[in-house]
Image (tube, rainbow, N blue to C red):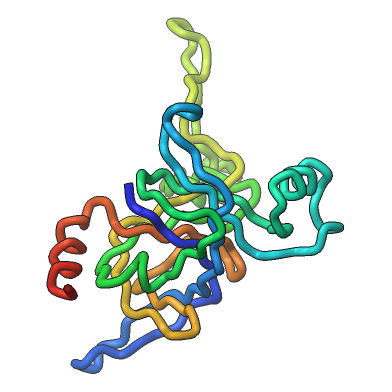
Length: 220
């Protein structure tokens, strides 16, 4: 498994191609990720590196977090994440975005989607609803029957119904990486889940690994 990088969503913009076509893009600001620990198969059943970013003051963390950083003689960080990888990296070293995403065409991004609160089936699942005409009363946006009368007599798990919408982890695959600025700003074609300020994990695409490998070989 390959390494990735963490970034903060800045917002959306547009870029113009050589033919004058306008393309929507998402701007992501890369965070300085410091490697603070490493997990091995001997103890954790998998290999991974633990990274931390966003240094904060001690008063902004809870007691278990403060104890962890003091025990390992580390600065205080707001976020701790890990990447499953067999790559051996030195503790205290930093992940450089241009090294990780060098000559990469497609990336996979993971973040938390916007929370929409409680939503009905039409908004949440795209139901067409009933006819909004005479005789339907005010139930034309309802989801209809949900269970069975005799055989099972219950509502099956996973049935599409009204409920909480959004605020879940979402991964969007195969987004094209347009460019990486010198100030750590990443430009990605298309939309990335979440609002401005959302934490985003960026990794080289899994399904487009072959295309990325060809580009990396050309760059050598």
